Image (cartoon, rainbow, N blue to C red; front, side, top):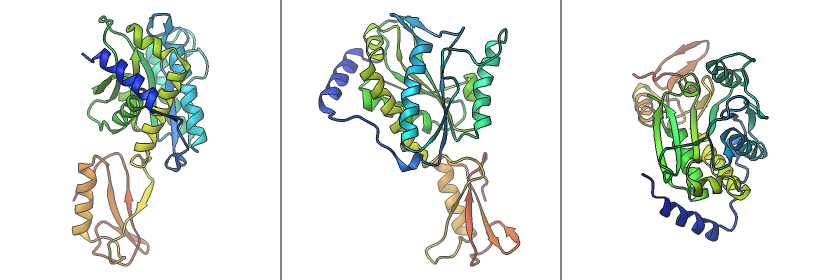
Length: 283
């Protein structure tokens, strides 16, 4: 169980030692389209404890995150901007969740982040937890969690795989961040404060900035060359592929010469590009 007393101490030390926690614009976000999903809303209030309605908290923080990301040059789409559910009246919860996934697809998003607040039978349980789709990399969830913990001093709840609807049905990098436990009276009090929410939003944005250069929409490219200035031969291409594979970055290298395109063509004087796709293409 996360240590609440330690979290309280770290939080206050963070506030004392941090002179400025405002997130500054990051050029790494300038070419990214990010969907922020304030969980629940409308007829789905989420957790309601200690005078806080989860749906409202999620939206409040999401709006703060949006403003910071827009200032940093990112294109930001919110799945909702008011206290409403997304699906048509009479639709199921699954329809509402699918509507959130559809927003990201329609936007051609690079990243999908769903914001939530947690609840537990043990009122002493506290902390920020990052969830990532089962069987996929945890980089995004980890970056968001670490950013939030570093900015707020909250208990570090770690990262965990999950089969949540919005995660398993997203075909882009996706994560769900539980920002804290509403059932913990102390943490609920922090989450209700505007200053703490600002720190939380700063941390989420810092996490996105830290991971954004490693996240690319399928089909985008990056040029690679050897030290000789030529594109890589089969040997070097294989090494690069294995490196990216171990860093959990799906990749496929192609070399281009005139009208024809061949994989691993031996060091021709032509452009070589690294294509980020949905699966690893090895040697």
